[in-house]
Image 1 (cartoon, rainbow, N blue to C red):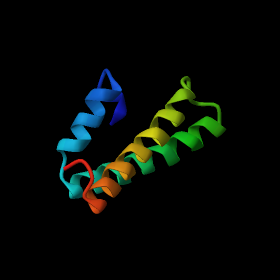
Image 2: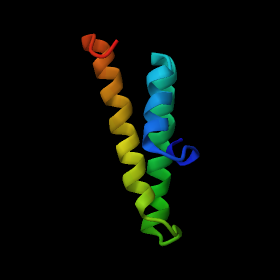
Image 3: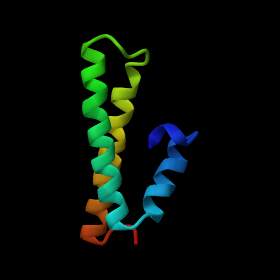
Image 4: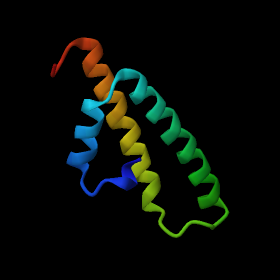
Length: 75
């Protein structure tokens, strides 16, 4: 999860070293977490609304890395 690393660079490095199956699993997990986070945000139970943006960006980063692999970029 993006919350477990201290910098974005570390997170991207972890993603680049992961396999495609791990990336798919991670994206699915973050998407589910984002859904739950949005529900809690709507009900006012969340203290850090910036996490929604972090999760959306994490999903975009994972999707970008998967697309790069598909096209053969940065290998």
